[in-house]
Length: 135
Image (cartoon, rainbow, N blue to C red; front, side):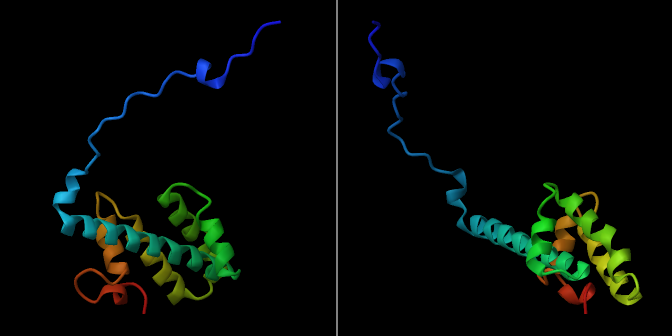
C-alpha cells in the first residue's frame, strides 16, 4: 500500500510576504480620490435609473426593467436596448419618444463626449443640468 501524502507535503510553501504594505500613489491626492469616487457613484446611479426607465418604457415593473437593462455587459448595448424598444412601447407619444431618444443619443456620445453628457443628465454639469434632456 502506498502511503498518502498530506496537503502540507504536496503544496509548495507560499512566497515570503513583503514587509512593506502596499500604498497607492493616489493617497497623496485625497481630493482626486474623492472626485473619482463621486464620479463612480453618480455613474452607477445613472445606470440604475436607466434600467428603471427601461421597465417604465416597457410597461413592466422597474425592477424587471433594471434586470433586463443589466443583462448586456456593454453600456452601449444597454443604451441600444432602450433605443430599440421606444417605437413599440412609447412611440405613440411623440414628445416623450423624442426626449428619451435625446437622452440615449447624448449618453452614447462620441469621441469622449459621453462623460460630459452624463454629467449634464445627472444635473452636475454647467447650465441647467437635467432640464436639458427631460422636463
